[in-house]
Amino acid sequence: MNYTYQYPHPAVTTDIVIFSVRDNALQVLLIKRGGEPFKGSWALPGGFVRIDESLDECAKRELHEEAGLEDVYLEQLYSFGKIGRDPRERVISVAYFTLTPSEHLKPSAGTDASDVKWFAISELPELAFDHAEIIRVARERLAAKMEYSTIGLQFMNEEFTLSQLQIVYEQATGKTLDKRNFRKWILSLDLIAETGKKFAAGAHRPAMLYRIKDPDRVDIIR
Amino acid sequence: MNYTYQYPHPAVTTDIVIFSVRDNALQVLLIKRGGEPFKGSWALPGGFVRIDESLDECAKRELHEEAGLEDVYLEQLYSFGKIGRDPRERVISVAYFTLTPSEHLKPSAGTDASDVKWFAISELPELAFDHAEIIRVARERLAAKMEYSTIGLQFMNEEFTLSQLQIVYEQATGKTLDKRNFRKWILSLDLIAETGKKFAAGAHRPAMLYRIKDPDRVDIIR
DNA sequence: ACGATATAGATATGAATTACACATATCAGT
DNA sequence: ACTGATATGTGTAATTCATATCTATATCGT
Image 1 (cartoon, chains in turn red, orange, brown, cyan):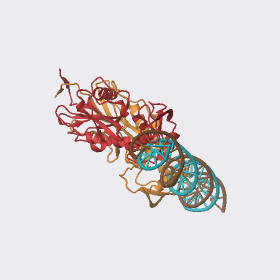
Image 2 (cartoon, chains in turn purple, orange, yellow, brown):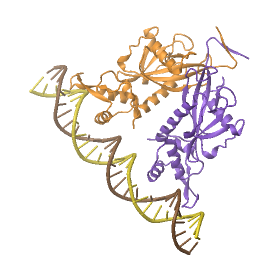
Image 3 (cartoon, chains in turn green, blue, orange, cyan):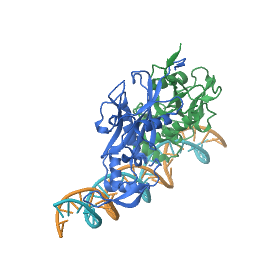
Image 4 (cartoon, chains in turn orange, green, purple, blue):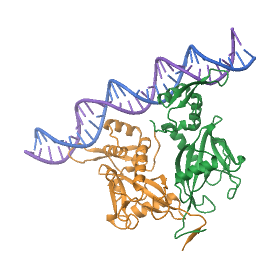
């Protein structure tokens, strides 16, 4: 079946930058392309917007289909529409980004496990299309938003220590933080609560475990 | 001539929220629609993205064609893609916003002068499509960005007084400011310089005129 | 000359951010 | 059981930043 228009229409996709802090580093989930163009290159999960779904719905669907993720923080990032960014036809990509806890996702998505992999943001492979630029823009947005919102908590598992949370903040912003000042600040925001449980992680004093008071909430602060 | 695709393609437009501070109020430039749908309603300037131009180029072109504006601060805002937002066909709009000095634009655009008009943000008419929502999102972005960037200077004419600048900040953020603290703050940023000239505006001490040191520059501050 | 009006400049106060050092609880090895 | 290694946990002083407030100045209109 064919679809005919009086004027040329671009194709529209959504591509999604999936961030997580794993192994003490900010990482991004990428998918190895099985077909042309850029066959064998790594790329962001994403795909064409269906004619009967909104942009948000498309991003959610791709997130589920290609990365097996649901119920995560999802935010529209920016739209990329340079000529020639896709060699096949004119394609405009509405990029999204999402944050997910490290436990939340075993990368065993769409087709094959070897096709889906986490990469440290500092060690990205060659990327298809303009996906390197999309990731760069997403990284900037993330770093900025860590500073003036409570988005950072979206990286955390059900229970976590203050040190783990500090590492998330340090990795996502690229800044190092003073332990005492970070604790004072994050506790003053009244966003997390002690669970009472402790977490023994090695030959040292065990850490208090915390939980998020209102896990689905992301607020602007400052 | 017709254009045929194997899968249905949405149409893509850019729509532009043009802000200015005029008559001591934040205003938006709107265009009265001459054709269906929403004939006679007011709408944002904008139009379909051509197959051989980028999104930014399209926004710049529309800005020129429909509002007679060039060389203004232009930033991509957000993409709106809900089903049914245009009754004709599936249309995705990549919205932009721009800031222009009050002297910069005599609204005598595209076709007819009566078709182009400034509206105070607090007194908007019925709007076509989802343009009311686009303006709402743009207003939020503007207010936020006034606080952490030097975007506000893009509203200013060649020469201006500190009081005029303060009014711009108050109108764009919706907050009232203390005159002395505002002056101290804006001068400490080292973004503007005295021209030496003065501006006599009534039965009171004339105000010093200032100019922007680097008019094309917009930086993140704080 | 005098009143009205908006411009202009300095200081004190409180709030928020930053800098900084040592005791504690556990595990591993002897 | 003692010792060393390691990450957790805590308080106070200094500084910077934001806020609040008061009085003098230059012009216009009468």
